[in-house]
Amino acid sequence: MSSINLQVQGMTCGACVRHVTQALNPIAGVGAVDVDLKSGLVRVEGNPDGAALLAALDEAGYPAQLASQASLTAAPAKSCGSGCGCR
Ligand SMILES: [Cu+2]
Image (cartoon, rainbow, N blue to C red):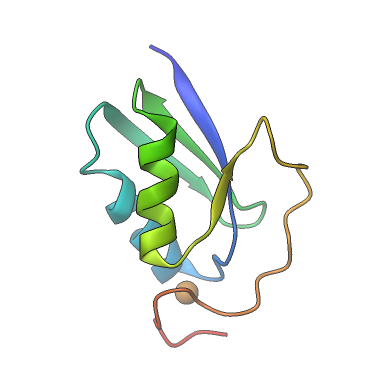
């Protein structure tokens, strides 16, 4: 099984991790979603359409890039994307 790595911006807490996971899970082809909060890296198992992943994250308030195209230095998070109340 293949996987896709994403660099996600704006995650600051466990609630953000849940938001991101919930945004990605329903997408066709997505298996396990593995989020690393500190680095902002998200690994998606399976064979989903990368553009659909990015669109779903953008909609959830967490701009993302495919990690292969991103510099792997995570941008510092400014605030939560989905109003979960953390800063
Ligand atoms: Cu949060």
